[in-house]
Image (cartoon, rainbow, N blue to C red; front, side):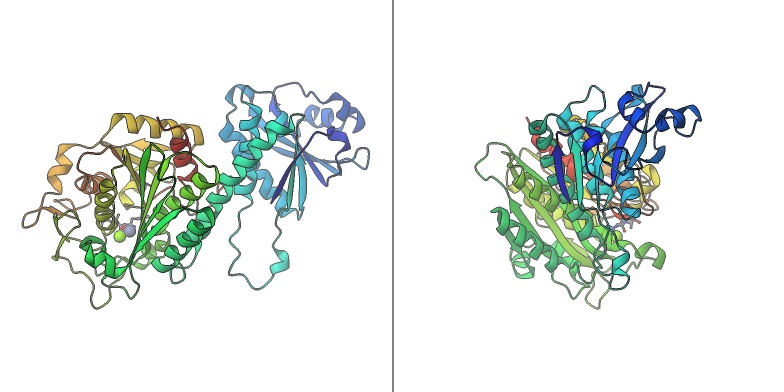
Length: 493
Ligand code: BES
Ligand code: MG
Ligand code: ZN
């Protein structure tokens, strides 16, 4: 989508549709426009057809009285409740409404709303909301292609073009990376295999001049990364540990590690079919790592980010790992496999141990790790579990800023007790019934593979995949985490 900034007067922009925002119970301040429209706007307010309530929409045809053909009044709610997230949501909705009306180009004045937020931030948010809300996964559609409308251009009206363009540029890079992650997550699992992810990473690395290494089965065997190898044993697809690195000479080094299970059947502890259906999304953590690395490169952030994607299928083939098996992980700890469906923590065990060897200041892992996380927090927040208060605080701040919620869960000794092994060092499922405090036991298991570096874990099982449309996230892959991580890395101290 093209996004341009114009300094024109709103009445003279040639466009099919012009968006104008109104706060609830605030005086409408476009008197000149209202006059040109013969009082249609004040009439709408008087007749209570439009009152500026959040998410209220009202369209008026201009009958050629001004250059725009239609005006779309958009309710922004009460001014005191305004936030950039609300602006993002509204623009996601506008994007959908406009797209459904088969309009290809439209203009907006929302960058001009009178709030305390900076112009650059408002424009960035409008850009994000519009591009994210317009996302459609159409790659596999061959019929009725003409029925698919796509927005081609957004015109943002602002009298400070230079500053507004900065917001456009950043918003575009971020939103397009989020949509890229959504594409990866939405791809059918037999297409988005570990090798496919490796090839995607390679092509991004080449284009953005990022260092990359890919360990296939042979290298993983040589390095004795048996936890990830164990998970992949039931599959015909080779596992891949993909390591990307931006700015190797920068002072600050941070590792981000993503769970990349390209399909989680559960392994021999096979999932029931209704739980298995969406398990192509089990690589969302790894996709988010790749999307984040892409943005770090494009925005030229001066941080040394090591991005690690732990990619494998979890299948019940004839060589599959069995409940009761014991594997020796990369760091030499032995793990008893109690349940083959608790595979994410296994691939991450090797990946975080490898990450720590790279001597980063911190490790952040992202994973669609547990159904228990979805039970606890629904689709509204990722679970945040960490061994370091400062890191926790920075992640919470970043999440607040990008409105990608995190909610802290505790790391307590009780849980460390629950994963102690009887005949091995650790077990991949808590004692007891196995699912009590499931999101925490899973995180505690990963923690046991971290020696001493500050580490944080984001369980995004509920936030990476939506089962229904939200304002700027259509159902399917959400691309959760990219904006949050970029915000975090950008402000790393
Ligand atoms: N990939 C799943 C977790 C998941 C569930 C992600 C729902 C997204 C939505 C994970 O590998 C898994 O299977 N976890 C098990 C763990 C159990 C065996 C302790 C679960 O949560 O049921
Ligand atoms: Mg599983
Ligand atoms: Zn899984």
